Image 1 (spheres, rainbow, N blue to C red):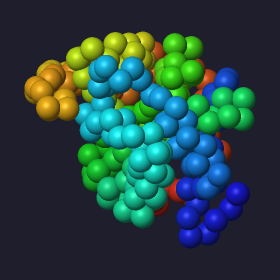
Image 2: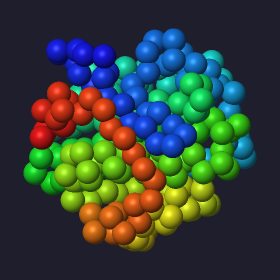
Image 3: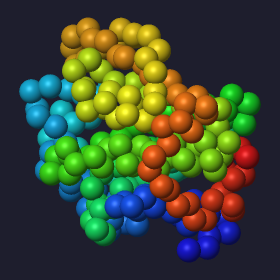
Image 4: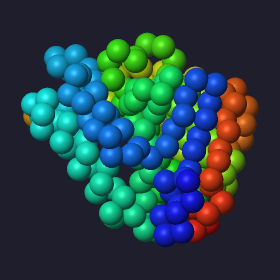
Length: 213
């Protein structure tokens, strides 16, 4: 797809099993429905913002609104790329990558979620590896950061498998109680050492000015 004024819709990341790209309207609706079906056990909260506490219909609507909001607020100085993750042509979840003052700082952060039926299959590692390749290989980032709330072993495990190193604890509010976030950081050298997932990127060239590159 070629779009003169919004080339981000032509960006594609492909791994051995997955494709990551901005979703079309019907695909975004399917992603919203996936969130309504459940993202985690309701007895605990793995996210800093407890959006999954919303009733299923409101949760689904919030997924669509968040997607549109991130696109509407995009600038080369403050951006979030909210990619849908496709497995065998079906929406499995979402993986984002963000940068603030990226042209100067050269650092990105990431966040994601998967529908419950897609968890425990290594998909989380593969989709994070895709956006790290975009960051380090495509956008020439110097570092990437991530965070996981205490008890979110899956997220922390993805970070460790991809070479991130612990980078301190932050106290956070989790629902109405205090909690802790473990921060992780990954620099270019360690990314190259732990780079094991092949990633193919298409359509990045016209998008570079949107990322501040």
